[in-house]
Image (cartoon, rainbow, N blue to C red; front, side, top):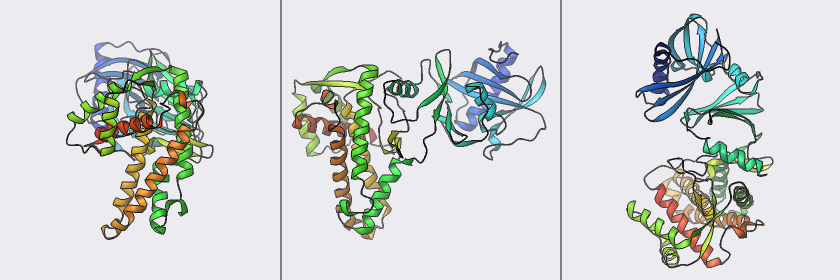
Length: 419
């Protein structure tokens, strides 16, 4: 076996790797459908050994990094988890113990060698979920490995790289792409120091407000300045997206018809008088407006505050729909997502409080929400160049924002949002 080569998969090897993939799927992702191993790359031959495996499972492409240890050798895991052991594996070097290499403290540095050519000193696990395994590398970079692949570049990676090249620096810059045969297997990014989760900052602001029970502008944790900066960052993202992917034009009446159809399909959903008026006005509108490749689900849980300002910390869904097709939308759809998020964090903060005092805090919570809505929109709309992406007439802008807020409300109906 040659490092970096694709392993020739005879029926015996396919079956052996297939058993490991099925075990991994059953333990990590709750699925163990029929598995067909498509390709195996040799990252490290011998003992320890590393194989990068791509397999077809239930119509999806699963991705697993298999590590091999001499049978009986001690294991050192990043987290204590017996599920990281996948079983026994035999090759020309004999019988080995196969493990999920991304959980193995000895093997993860060797995965980094395979990806970037350098071995780190310290690696720690940040998270492991269906979106990716994220590892902190030497407190300087992060490695994300995708457990599920697409036949095209990963949409989040594609968007991140394109916006970085377009000069949008509100992100963790990509350092290296792990890509094979057109598929993104993982990505290495710079690690953003001293970053605070957007949801946590907003929640802290509301808790400070509830402690003082005064107007939000007088509370110690007033969020308005942050909301302005967050609006500015969002506008810059849309301008960079228009530069990187181009812009198109859409009819406002078509957008209104799409939202009306969605409201009818997802019922019962209460439609506010403001939203009803927006639907009425836009249904008969002849106006057209710009569309760009938007983030697609921009909320406080996907942004973070660093010493250098706000950044987009999570690039999913990356401007594509559930089937992976690129979607161009009005930039105000992302704006509405964030406005909805400000409302949701306000409602969440209220739910934390004792029901006996909740009633008297509703007015301050509403004032906080309205203040930060205005601040976010002020930052967004005052960004130079954004006037080319959204309608300039105030009434049309208001109606479109209300339309997309209704769309977001309907889409969120029946499912719990991520904070």
